[in-house]
Length: 303
Image 1 (tube, helix red, strand yellow):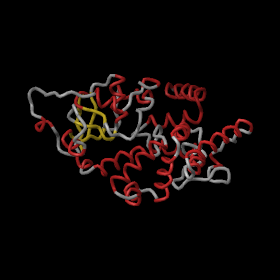
Image 2 (tube, rainbow, N blue to C red):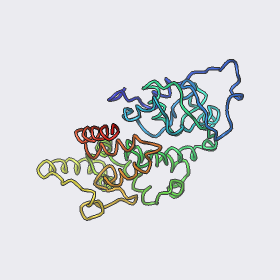
Image 3 (cartoon, rainbow, N blue to C red):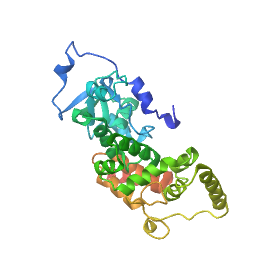
Image 4 (cartoon, rainbow, N blue to C red):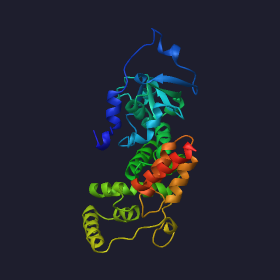
């Protein structure tokens, strides 16, 4: 159990889902046609055991799921999933491919069922399935850059080349190369990158040298920053001399995108993922600002 009650995907996969029947009906008699939406009890759903995200993140932002679900989760059948991963034990009818956090939130906050869409076409091969999962998570709140790098590396392995992975993710070859390079960092430097303590630009530079040099350079950088703290990079500086951008548009001096970019992206997805906007705003204005904003919104709603 991690901080804040967050559970890993492995634990979720092991504890969710039971073999069951519905009034003696066979499984094939109750499965709707591909692409159709239906409601499924949580006992019939299990989280993707091979999800590239290490944790489910803070689920509190999804508490509203107990009352309404804006978007169905995407699942594949147990048979389709185990055809790809025969070594993985699945004790449920469907495996959630897109929407694992919603599944976990439904369990946490007491929603008994979820709307699902069955898309076995995503399970045509491992590469297609992994591409769908990565494409959903890239640039999302809570999907840190090292998780992203590991997922991209897995995809390169499935497709057989970095160029093919880049094409299927609709990313540049440089972006893929940058992410994969981060996996050459020493473990402690990877953790520092995940936390945002080590900026992506510096992490990428350190990844080019041997591990001992990485550690020595990082240790010296920490000492130097203790005497001369690095200045904050504002949104307006994200493309200037003090904050070069990586190939995908992220400021390399920050773990996440510039404030206007991250909030703007969340606004565009508000209808399907309102929690993302809350996370993006909270990241910019902090606890005190969030409380003030919540108070102002309550006033507006009452008017």
